[in-house]
Length: 116
Image (cartoon, rainbow, N blue to C red; front, side):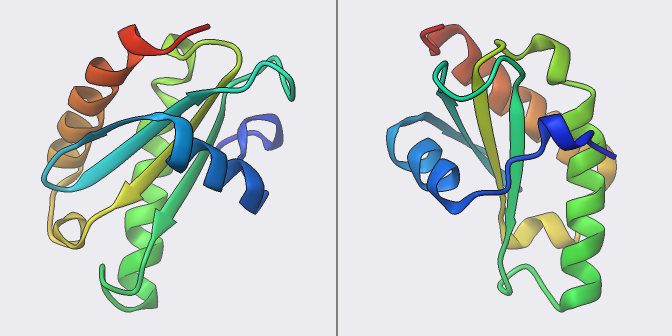
């Protein structure tokens, strides 16, 4: 579980990260990473899992798995990072190892490019 300080909940921050942040995609996820020094000193993470991924049970399972995997990467994010992880339909049938590998690969692509 992510602590409340690390949760991204407002729609404006989601829009800002997806429109202005760096993006990287893989088979199961797309990652948007932006730097927002004005709002917070801690990195915040949000998740987008649409109905294209599956029914409510499947979507919630994917979100839980992604939350757990993203929590492991919080230490590597800059303090002002806003991370949005968007699950693709392939995430519904992917194993946790596949999701973790895709998330790590995407983060490796966008992290060096974020201005902090």
